[in-house]
Length: 171
Image: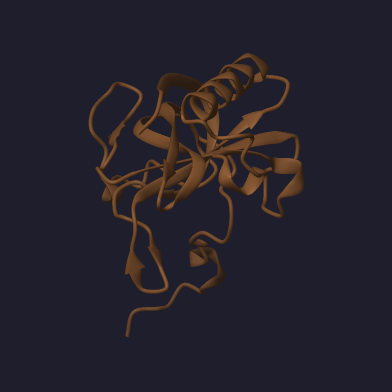
């Protein structure tokens, strides 16, 4: 592992969270992961810090500018997902389960239902460069997430249809 940078990002939306169980692709378990949406204007300082860390890590690992699809920070305007327009998207993962806490720092579980795609979080993340037999790229590392506030949910979540039923009389 080449040079490593770690930082806190605040008040960002989370997308595709697999932080309580490892993500699965084609039936194979992979890593704990999620993406963070950083608003290009509101988070300009954090984005600049991440870009600088990416450049430094790549330089230290002797990687000439890797193609965009091999870097953990991507331009959301070039992606076709809900909520990415006007944002930079930072994808992070970890082999170890990240710390996931509520606003008061109490641990959260999946069953709590607090963390979901579209909510706002604070996160501790890092970037590191990979230059080995598996390729040359700059990856995002996920250490922890703190729920900050609710946001509009991405994708189709559970829909409450209880009001659509009629009251039934007792038999």
